[in-house]
Image 1 (spheres, rainbow, N blue to C red):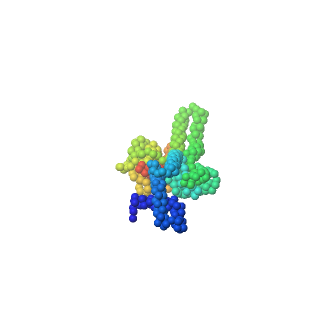
Image 2 (tube, rainbow, N blue to C red):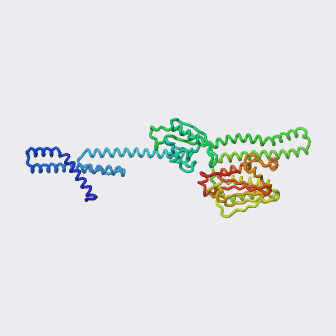
Length: 480
């Protein structure tokens, strides 16, 4: 059986014979009729038919070859994007067909390139937008998402139902309404993990008649309003907290000033005593305002994880050195124990130093006079931060301890186990609240363990720098 080039030649020959027979059909019919009426001898009729077929085949052959070459050139043009001009034989029509095919292919290729360029530009614009964007089909399935959305939802949500990405009934109901025919809807909602964030979701219906890519029917955009909402709450909280906490020292200052202006105007002993108290109250107000402003700044950035790398043992040594004088003033010391070979943590060095200063300061103030403060840096135990590796920083005192019923509220603003003692020690009631929010920003964990009569241990767990990608997306802060 012929193969390869032989098969192609045999196929060409068959088509030549077929076309030749078709073209010579009228002449062959006439010869058959003449044979039937005995107008021509059978041998002469057979010879005449053979001659007609042969002559017609000779004429048809170059045209069939031209069609074959044209078809091969079209296939190559479609496959490779270019092809040499085929030899179409004597047929002008085949040459015109080739010219038309080549021109149409060029126009199609130009159109395809223009579409690809537009799609690349749109993809670049979509990826560069800072707000998360999701494109939905008529079945509420996510068909496109930009980089911001992939970061927000821990990987690309494409191919999933919207309910698997945003588990909020109001957002899903708004999406269903828009897909059912409404033009647009806006919904405010909150996302609790990895930290509390607030968004405004805008769902807009797209015109299906324009043949949107991938069956896109609606656009959902998410605008992060966490900073705006927190700023509003911070202003309200600042006014409420400041007015409450500043009322007592301000009343004290006003009372002493009126006394010094009146009955104690010429009493030197009372003036010196009152001025000392006024100085102490003024410093208390200064510390309170500084802590409130610090807490506001921390909360403002809490939804954005830090990007720095910190050697926790080195940072602890530096902070301990600055706090040693204060410990010695109460007859105590600060003992630092740091494990060797600890990995760097993903952290903001200034904020972690502030955490350590607050914890050591509390340990010095509330520990028994003359007792040491123990600072320990070591690897976090397995499971402390879920699947992530971490480094633990612990500060332990030998104080009176904290009753268990108070532990859950220690990190609330202005919450004090013993308000009178806290104020006497110069505390503002904000130190542990600052610690909590800094640890939450770092996607870490704060553990508090205390036993009445023996002391307290405050431990923070921070994720190592090698887990940075998972920290920014999967972090689940566990803070008391």
